[in-house]
Length: 449
Image (cartoon, rainbow, N blue to C red; front, side, top):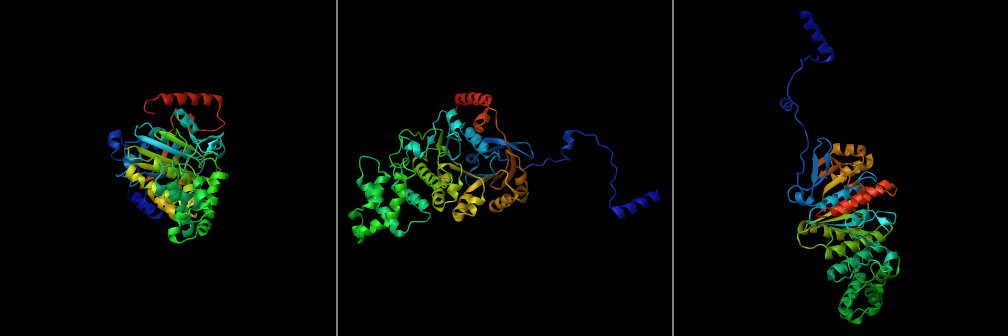
């Protein structure tokens, strides 16, 4: 025994501690759970919309900004990030479909994606018996949908703010004092003199080209000076009346737009996503909704914007949406922004405005990104190191969720009824089309939708 102890001591000194042999233990799972304690991050509660399963624990993951607001969330706004083809679109669509099962929910979608000549949300709108509002310059010229920036439903201040934003986005710079004065004087003159119909952009343009003496004489300024100040403004607005965007905003708002429908889809898929037209459209639709859709009626509203970098990357549009986001606390609005790359906006012209909007988004969902992009995203959003490291390895349908510091990895689950409405691949087979039709009928027949 002495020799054995000496050998063990020498082995321990040279190679480290010798592992002892342990006898097997027979026990029950009830007793073993006290030895091997389970570890899982705390959930968000069980009230709201089910998203899927938390990857590490396997438990259900439930999220609802309206239920969490004031307790775990300081604001109900949500940012969704990730490379194409990893599940962002599927998440958005199932989230909206599940939210609409609550009777006090209402959703507006700005649909900038499209296939086969229609927006990506067209299937869901049809399934709910709703017609998308297609903003298309070509269709608008033949009696299509129009939205009037001078709609009387928008306050006087809101109209002027919208006109300034349209001009600043198109010009790529802010209005100077003289051009701003010319626009303000023309707007006031039009509102004071146009009766019996909605004022339209043509009225503003004509007044800018031929200013009214009574609106400027009190300042001791000559009419021809005001005319010169407003010339560039008139040329920019003329684009909405007689240029490539004509037809959509140069008349009274189209009758029959149902702002009480559970789902309102603005189909922007016919607009070039890389042109200046897209941020102009988003600004007009955003302000128009602010003054016509958001009301103190106890409804919980969701405003989902595809290709949201058009908003966050423009200082002038971002400022408008910053104001819109503040309605989240007062009137129950949740803004959902979908962006491919955060670097597209934080390094852009609207870095300051983008930072302010990102701070308002207390929920951030990040799908797979390349390593460099993941590190940049982690720095901006303040994600923990472990989350940043796994983002490049995530499979489609799995994302890192950061809900005001509660960070978990979640696998999104799609039901069989939702699948044909969520995946809008143009290469669908005949069997898949038939399945889609059955799902649409089933969804439309369910109560509460």
